[in-house]
Image 1 (cartoon, rainbow, N blue to C red):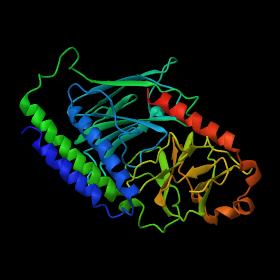
Image 2: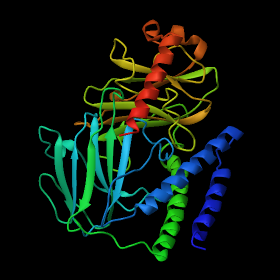
Image 3: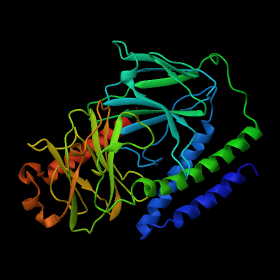
Image 4: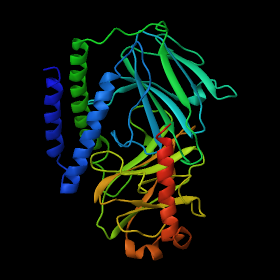
Amino acid sequence: MLTQPFAEALAEAEKIITEAPHIASEADLVEGLDYLAGSIRASLQMAWAYEKDFPFFVRSTGPYTKMGLDNPDTLYFHSYLRDDAEYVVTGRRGTTADLSFQVLNGNYSPVEVPDSLTAFDDRAFDIDDDGRFEIRFGPGLSGRNRFPLGPGSAMLIVREVFSDWAAERPGMVRIHRVGAEGAAPLPLSRDTLAKRYGVAGKILLSRLNTFLAFPKWFYLDLPVNTMTEPRATPGGLSTQFSSVGHYDLDDDQAMVVTVPRCADAPYQGIQLGSMWYISLDYANHQTSLTADQARVDPDGKMRFVISERDPGVANWLERTGHRRGYVQIRWQRLSRDLKPDDGPEVEIVPVAELPDRLAYYEQATVTPAEWSARIAARQAATAARMLG
């Protein structure tokens, strides 16, 4: 049967989810099974988009295809590549905080992170007065607007990052292989479809295994309820630093994360993630904030309150029932390396004591109506951005 390899992968994938070591409740399992559904959808899309001669950019993650602690502020796109071909990428720069490109060698696997062969943002190429650009990727290319494809180059990733969800507008990007203009791929065959179903199953299993192992590499060996100093983000995205941690909180506890607003980072954001290593619901709950969305205190610092109970402040990050989870701060489009004093300080505080212990508490408070308006704005902005 044509789909048999994929069907077998589905059964194995469900076993990976149901046997995950962090499951502690029915809610954890249900969330995992929902994550599985998104992973199935994404794996099929990636297998069918595995076209290196007639490529186009496809959405890598979204609200229903989450993976790898996806950033709620980012639109991710990818295209597959041949390392012996030349590609032209054309586009129009939007008004977002950051636009970056990265060439990866191979795919993520349960034992390693793929090598980043080339990584840069839009400061590395020319953009005309109308926001339009053209860049080239290929073996041996160098110079302005020309970027090399080293041996093993397999995928081009594009990240478009929003800091102000309501005001910023996405751009446009497309790709074609030089020499393929006006031609067409071969018609589909049963053999091609059989191969794609097999590839989809392999992608699915690799995706699940990798991103259940990934936190062990970078998070879970850290002391709980702490965050690291800023460091270059693993995976080679050259303009990004991050600070990471994992939390474990009772319902009457709050984790207060205090971090300076970094003037040298056009994008700075914090987010929460579940133990499945995916973002929490960022459309209907405030589980992430950028520096433009957050309230900055008079001393130039942002104080985020991670808790289950509503602390009544603007910078509340909702746990949404997740006693355990991940927290990450990202700084992007940097022109300098960050230092320890650019990073966060963390304190565990009883929620009831926040009025006395949270600096600038009176300025930070919001009314229920103001909070409802914040959520409504997130919902509207997310809906508009997902059409981009």
